[in-house]
Image (tube, rainbow, N blue to C red; front, side, top):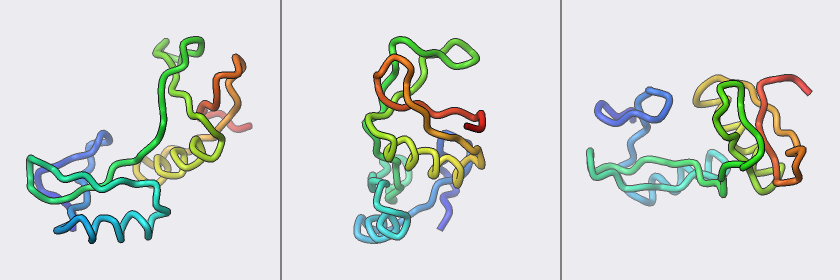
Length: 109
């Protein structure tokens, strides 16, 4: 069920789950890379994407913000898949030119 109070970073209403177990089942159905979190605002459970994402100290995006970096290509791809579903943005992983890990880009490889 969609929340009427809680929105994600993309501005869309989040899915609500009445229990942790229900949220865990939904996470597994979506590939298992989402973590249930209990929301103090609405009292329900939501799902959050879990990554070891951090910022690269060398690479910036087109607006000069530090780019997010992912430890593995698989983690970057999972994030890209999630963002495609949630924000309808197509992103492709690529290796950081400084050897720090993996970035995402909107440009086709």
